[in-house]
Image (tube, rainbow, N blue to C red; front, top):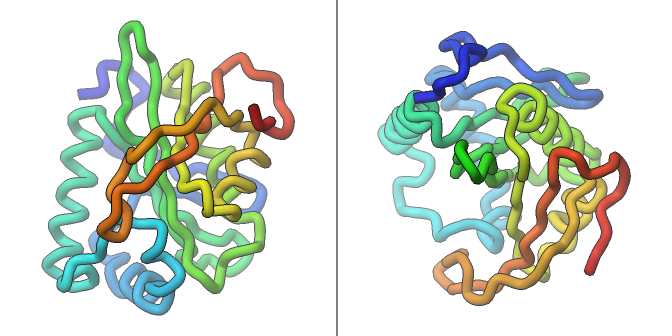
Length: 198
């Protein structure tokens, strides 16, 4: 359970310049399934292998249940990303593996629908979640990992002020294959600005 007093069931929407973030609701299913379904070929190279029932309503219910359980336990918060100009669901971003105590850290992961790519929405979403993690949750360090070939994701992280710290060998099983990942991180007292490569 989140021990901090600002955690309530009615977590407010977070607003950026181009996006609004809020927790997923059960009735988001149709829009979520549409965006994910039409973006499958775009997303699959960067995600765990899709299951045969990936977009089914029952799988969606299990997903929502897991989001709520993770939130209740204080280990993760999933947000949906809505484009402010249109109000449409564009993607998702999760602050997960949240740890307090001596670590005070979390890890972000994200996805965006193909038709919403290249508009700066994900960079804005990463900045919003990072601010929330530092200012509201009082975390000290936020990490993100991406496959070295994922140039778009690298650009997002560096524009959001994350810094590359190294290579994690055979880190995550993506689309059925164990993949190396670059590790990126941002620290609460890092100066604002563009991330740099080491």
